[in-house]
Image: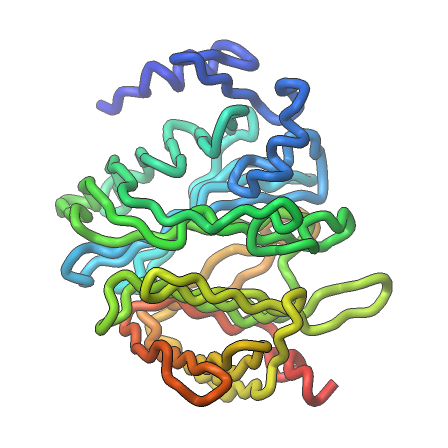
Length: 359
């Protein structure tokens, strides 16, 4: 028999609930007066508190065990439209199997003080998590702590990885980084198997808006063989813009204690963009450095993605892709070079059309 956490009981019996001096609200409630400004400068916070339709928001929690044998991603979120609901998606990166668990939209709660959300009995935040999903072979119950989190820096005119694009109200999709890298402490019961994630590594990001792009390439890893503290993320996508569209990109490399940013808004340029089947190669040049990325997909699972807020599109993701990253300065000095045998990789839509050199 499962026991619903006492905090969840409080949330389900009140609208804006208070527990241990933390306020949780449902969509449609009136959060505190300054919440609108607070969430602008904190992309990890729930953004869609005033939305009613054609809207989605989801967080991506990747977890890799210390020995690398177990890889999972949990995606809690909301879908607002004709079929409004909250959900938790799960992908087993080893087998590629996926599950989509639906919950009434009324069972989604968000904190007005930090990033922390409840989806039914499942809790996700920047420092802890609890999941209670499925039954039988699909049973997943676990809890854990997020330790030693490396945050993406927030600057006055650049509140997160979107840079100044964060202030553009008509963007189709926004992106945020919650944790560049962290360690895990906790266990899961998956079916009848106990899996320990203690000593493993994790990563958290999020997306929100109306729809995911028509085409994109996304990759991420913080499991580099030769550099345990390195983390890399790159997203190249088709961006609708005032009746037209362009290829935009953003990403970072965190290595040797330094954060190297590269994005359309930083003035960096894509010099090479090649995709063929399950392979992709991208070379980006900025004013101070050049970064080369090569990725090959592995076992893939089917995930649902939003179109006008509705989770109606199927995409494919690998968590066990293999990627390599090389960073050099303008004089050709290698600042970082590494391979990650455990990486996330998505190639979605007509990726060949993303090549800015052929547009």
